[in-house]
Image 1 (cartoon, rainbow, N blue to C red):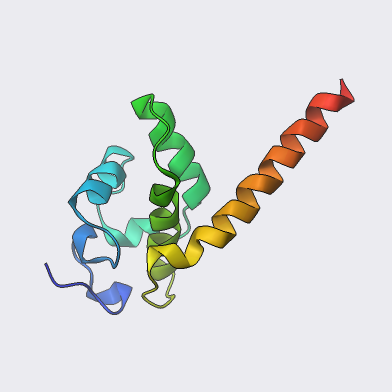
Image 2 (cartoon, helix red, strand yellow):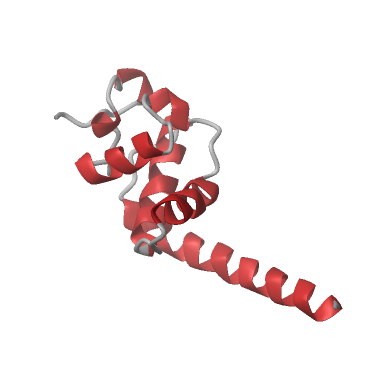
Length: 106
């Protein structure tokens, strides 16, 4: 399936850059059936939800792909999923710091 250059061109999830059959299946499992439904979603929350629903911690690259897909759906450029790896690492590290800080308040 041909990848889109803009979200307006997308009718199917597989047309979103970086989204193949497996990621499209994950998104459908989360209730996202059309590319336009990605706009406004929190990719970190989507990742947490897919891990919770499947009972498996998915590869963090899945999160990178969710970030890329959401950003594209919101009008961003077609960017390779690995472009978001550094951002994901920063955000998840900050999450850990916040969770740890809450735990020490006792």
